[in-house]
Image (cartoon, rainbow, N blue to C red; front, top):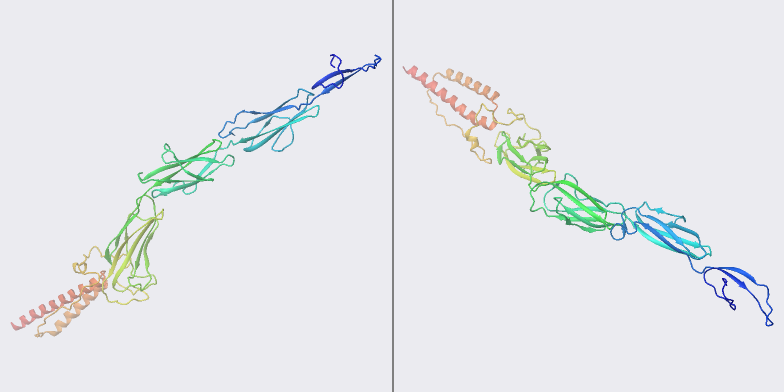
Amino acid sequence: MDGGATQASPVFVSDGSHSVVGEARDVAGNTANTSSLIVNVDTIAPVVELVVSPAVPDGDNNWYISWPTVNINGSDGGSGLEDVLMKVDGGAWESGPITVSSDGTHVFDGMAKDIAGWTENISETLRIDTTAPVLSFTSHSDGDYIAGSVTIKGDGLDEASGMAIVEFSSDGTTWQSASLSGGAWSYYWDASALNDGNYTLSVRGYDAAGNYGETSIDIVLTRSLPSINISELWYIWQSGDLSVTEGGVPITSVRVTVSDPQGRWPSVVIYSSSRPDSKSQVTWDRLFGDGTVAPPGTYNVVATVTDTMGRKASDTGQIVIPESSTATPTAKPAEQDQPTAEPTTPASTPEPTVVAEVPPDEPPEEKEPIVVIEKDLKPFPWLLSLGFVAVALIGVTRLYDPRPPALRKIADLFDDASAINQEINTTKNINTRHKK
């Protein structure tokens, strides 16, 4: 075999191509014609390998964070290679190289087949994540107002390798670990030591492959509550002073309501504004929600302010209606000769001191003046004429008097007494002249 020494059969040969010459000889020494044969032996399967570039994953935890290229190599020391093919994720066989362009886990299969029919297979799994995680806030939005320490929440989404770490910062420098459960994160922000003002809340995260993502929102930290103040007490013909102060965030509504302390009639809103002035005047037309005219008495006033965070503040006051000619409620307001649009005391008529000193629930007591008239009224016609003139003057004055009824009533008493005194003095003078 292969030109070597003659060997008795059988002869065992190794892999490769061999030339075998056969010869037969009998006992007498006679030989037959020789014959030769080429024998090809291949008992070893080919060698195959997958070549990945980069050879080592460039991310964390054996993840590729860039697109890898995969090729296949094969060799056979025996009969030689017939096919060297590869495929990815169970696809069709092809000759390579193959570049993957989608994130996820991918399986690469390779196969080499030699001429002798031997085959060798290989498989390798690559994990690829080239996409940064997407982080978001779910508990708050850009421009929100925060009243103090609060739990901030959000989501961290990463479809390939998944979220690994989430960190939170309110100054962009100091980062703290946030709680992470599945794709949701949360962080308790302790703002107790911080000053009110504008803050940028940031959150960043890393997925298992090492990709990085970050997002932020701008918020306003404010712990100052809105405030509202209204006059403690005022009379029906006066105006109540209303003042409103923001608590660091805009005000959405201000309402002033009048109610009956005994609950006899539905309350009524006498002032409402979504953009109030810092200082305002409020008045009441004496009507309740069902149109009933309020009788004399003391009525409760509640002023409430609400800001954009839903925080509220309130203050209370009272409106006093002194005793007047109308003491019982009516379905419709009776015509009154005092102005109702602006129930304030005219600037030209100073407010009588006697009314301001009377408590709200005790209207000024009306007393009839005591007048002493002399019996000796001889010129009676003159006295009668003067009386008619006085009555006419008083009627005109009342017709055009803009003061409230309670004040006019007190003033009328003084006017009547003054007129009678004038008549007495006139009578005395006449009597004196007659006696002379």
